[in-house]
Image 1 (cartoon, helix red, strand yellow):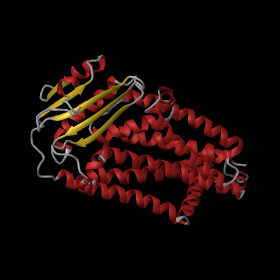
Image 2: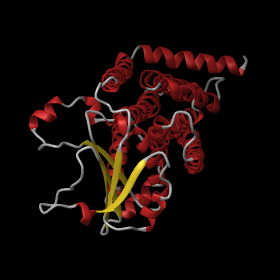
Image 3: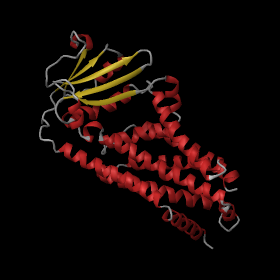
Image 4: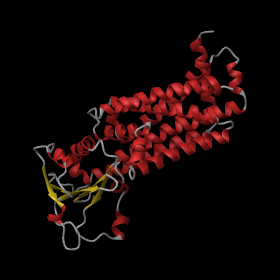
Length: 367
């Protein structure tokens, strides 16, 4: 029997198992529905009539002129009116920032104790679309200059000339509270985790618990073929789910090679994590709990990395760190290739995970 036929039979088996699990298909449909609702919100935001044609003046308020500030200052495009001012020169008696009503203000805060840099952009008007040309070069410049720091935090808030009220919060749309690229990146990471870790852990642990995986290993199908069939099936689910979300939020991203390379590397590494989890767990319940713990541990690590330097160093050894950054800037710059140096550590980490997962599956995963 040809080996390709064996792989096709194993793929057909995985497909039938997915058809018998409607909750899995419902989860993918839910994530796609969230992307569709987000696209509707951003479409209304883009059609806002009060977006000025001219970006206007942008003032970057800094605590002091550090080397990082000076390096970013040298990268300001010639066609943009961007000024750098000390905080003490624009601070009022009550601690509020002063300036003309139509100025966009960017706060650059340096925390000496945690060595963390926080960026807060206060834009004028109903939408931040007017300052998008500024954000297009400022965000990459900040990531390039502050790469040695543990965290760079960006947030967009509307600059109100009057006091912020609860009525303003109630009237704010989802497009004002969450940017498309941030939510899109989060949805893509969720799709990768669900398809390549959760489902793989569930199916593999079920096979181990019912002893069907050992029975398959005793047939003409070899262990590499079983592992290859699982990888193709879950990778295809991840690619289809990611492509569906991107087609809704940013169709131009479908021709971006950085996006596809990031999705493939992230999906493969997540599959390897799921394979190791399914290998260590003795039953399906334990495997599902370990997969949930992995997801929660990653979220906690990313939060602690913004507070403590030691956790920032640990975060650099996770594939999600580079995957998040590459996907985020692929959304921001669909026509350019950003941060190619992040691809190298991501590839190395993925290769390491493939080696570990293959060794674990061949030794213990099929028993």
